[in-house]
Each structure stands twice: as structure tokens, then as C-alpha cells.
Amino acid sequence: MADEVVLLDTFFSMFGMRARLALAEKGIEYEYKEENLGDKSPVLLEMNPVHKKIPVLIHNGKPVCESLIIVQYIDEVWKDNNSPSLLPSDPYQKAQARFWADFVDKKLYDAGRRLCTTKGDELETAKKDFIEVLKLLEAELGEKSYFGGENFGFGDVALITYSNWFYSYETCGNFSVEEHCPKLMEWVKRCMEKESVSKSLADPKKIYDSILVFKKKHGFE
Amino acid sequence: MADEVVLLDTFFSMFGMRARLALAEKGIEYEYKEENLGDKSPVLLEMNPVHKKIPVLIHNGKPVCESLIIVQYIDEVWKDNNSPSLLPSDPYQKAQARFWADFVDKKLYDAGRRLCTTKGDELETAKKDFIEVLKLLEAELGEKSYFGGENFGFGDVALITYSNWFYSYETCGNFSVEEHCPKLMEWVKRCMEKESVSKSLADPKKIYDSILVFKKKHGFE
Image (cartoon, rainbow over all chains, first blue to last red; front, side, top):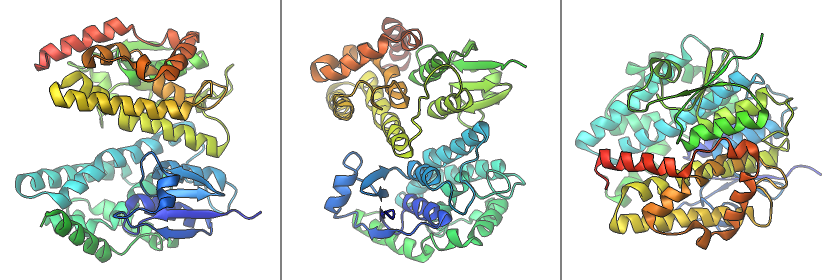
């Protein structure tokens, strides 16, 4: 029986894009179902009753939730597909990849959210925090091609789906990521040369349009 | 060469206890170094420059940070030791174990922190949230012996190190976990029958003493 793979997602989600990217890396065909987060579908509420959030990967009827867990699941289930593993096999390298992916989740999302939803001093603090997080990531990247070394991997998947949000962050905060982190932007360009990445990431202008709608709705203009 | 294993930890940390417990499960000898979080050691700042937090597992000189990442690392490095793996080999079961461990981290810590540091309505909300999280966990446990089924595993490690904080939470919030979640308390007792668990968990009264010192210091009395 062929695998039945469904992804409940929302086009602008950096978390959803991680799942899309991992599926693209492994060459998995799947059904993409766009969720309206203002009116969640019964299938989303049934498949992720705990968090009620996208993305949810439904594999042969069984749900997997939380983006980094989904990416690891995809990497483990389709480990024999025609692409290198996203997680390295060495336990120490694996722990390092998990550490940086976790760091992105713990630090970058919150700073980015504040960039898009605050003003004045709060916005200045958000900008400072955001740039500080990116500089730490740039330092970790160092002279390597990718976060794990020579091959595109788990840490790259975790971070690259923020890169098409940079336009929105830069516009909201009036700054340039490239000016502060030129090496990191080189890494973004390197990743974007991979078809699995470029085809999985949403259009930065469309993401910004969604943010404008959100800001208007919630009075953050 | 024998493995050199050091754990930078603080006795009352539910995160540190996870590392202690995983090391005990695998029968690994290690040097325990108690950190004073009010005056962190140079070795902690050097080994975890990003978060500057315990626990840090130092294995042959190389640091691994973040408790759930440490537990997975221990499980992977000492996979041939004389104990079953904490993570199941099946990718779906593994994703489920990771999901519930992540749920504990995302929901239980914050509700518990608020139980110990707030008063009045805020305290009542914290209590409600805390019990709700435990009830969800109890429902997930169902009639199983452990979170993953018949064997003590990753989800159990993630949650059991909160159980010796229950005395403090109950005292701060004036409620009984057992009254709300009797099945979960049966699971706690089942886990505590394992020597690896009972010897890794701190004394509940000593944890409460530390909380009293903390409350006094930060004006939460």
C-alpha cells in the first residue's frame, strides 16, 4: 500500500515550511491542506487536540505534531530515500543540531513576533534581541557551508524557514539583516539554491501582506 | 580510554534530575558538580555560553546542553548498555514520546513557576492551568503502565522529575494532586519503585526549603 501523507499547514508558517521542506528533501508526495487559523477545520482539531496548531503531518491516518518532531519523524521514516539524512548519525553532532534548532525555537520566534507587534522602546528592544540571536547563529555557522558542516541538515531546516520572514522583520523594524549578518545572508542564498528549499518557502511579500492584515485586525498599526 | 562524564547540575532542578535519571538508567558513573545558580562557575559559563544554564553533560570534554537533548544523547551513546532504550525504535512511537516530553516542557514548568511566585487570582489561574495540564497527561497515560506502554521511557523521564516538586506546588497552591489525578499518582509510585528513579530525585522537603529561600529573596512571600 502506498503511503498516504497529508500536511495541515498555513502558507506563511515558518513551522509548516519546515515540514514542507523536509518532505521535499525526501521527495515525498503529499496532499497539502491550507488551514484558516481564524476558523480551524474539524480535522485539525481532531488531529492535534492538545495544541490545536499547524503543522500536523498525517501519515496513513496517524498525526504527528510539532514541527521539529515532524522533521525528525520524516527523516527517520524515509531514511532510505534518495537523499542524505537531515540528522547526522553521530550522537554528538546530532545533539548539536538539536541544540541549535531548539535555540531557534526558543529565541528567534519570540523576538520576531515582538518586531511585528510592538512600537517605540519595545520595538527597539525586539530589534536588538533579534539581531543578537542572528549574530549568535552566524557565529555558530562560522566558515561552514551549513550548520552541520558540508551537508544541508536539521539546523538549516529549523532556521531557513525564517529567512523569508526577514523582509517583514526588516520592514517592521527598519533595519537590514544583511548589514548586521552578511555571512548568514550568504548561507541563506546558498540554501535557496537548493530546489527543496526554494520551492518550500513562501513569498516574502505575501507573508508581509498577511502580517499587515493581522496588524490591522489586532490594532498593531 | 574510559569515558569521562561530568554533570553540572543543581540538586532541585527537574531538568538536571532528568540527566541524573538517564545516567542511572544506563548505569553510567559520573562526577556530579553542584552549581550555585547565584554565582555560576567559570566552567558552566564556558560549557554553556549560550544559555548559561544547568544541566550540562560534559562527555570526554565536550558539552551537551538542554535536558531532553541530554537524555536523547545518553540514550544514543550508551545504547548497548544493559538497559532498554528510553526512546522506542519505531519512528511513530518515538514522535509520540517526543511530543509528550515537549508538552511537559511547554506547559508544566510555566504553570508550576506561577504556582510558586503568585498570589490571589493569578495563583488560582496557575492552579487551574497546572491541574489541567496534569489531567491531560493522565488522560494520555490512560491504562498504560508508563507513557510509552509497558516500559519506562522518554516521556516518563520528562515528567517524573516534576513529581518531587508536587509537595511544593501543593503547599504553595493549597491543593492535592492525588485528589485531581489519582491515576497519575499511581504512575508516580510505580516509577518510584525503580531505583534509578528514586535515587535520582531530590527530597521534596529540601526542594520546598529552596523555594522558601527563593521567595524570601525575591519578595514573593
